Length: 140
Image (cartoon, rainbow, N blue to C red; front, top):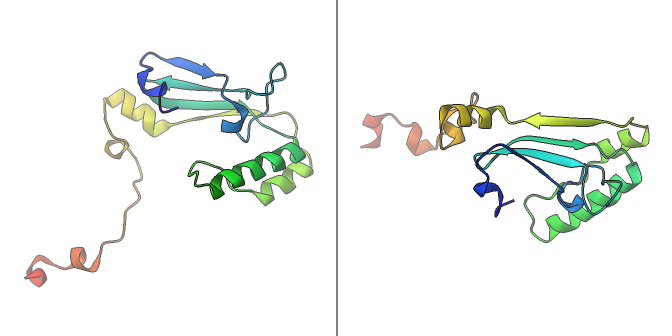
């Protein structure tokens, strides 16, 4: 992710991610080490993430537990256990696939922006500190 992705310039679908990196994706039938997933990478940025959804509640619970163990070891990218999602899976989910497109990243690519802050439609605003919120004449 951090080694190869920045070097990808032309549009490229990256496949064969290890299943451990895609905890919500099904494993490939012909090689369960890999997930049934792909990412479209352009100019070093992930534009689209697509995968076959894991719909086995027992396997999903095992994967969530593995992710929780990684979180406890300090991983910031590991998923949290989602009990509501597991309950929904236990009620049954048909085979499903989906993709997500990073609209802000697409806007960055089309405008040549170097930072997402230049194109984000609804930026999150931090509350001003007391010092920042004072009028200029009050600061003196």
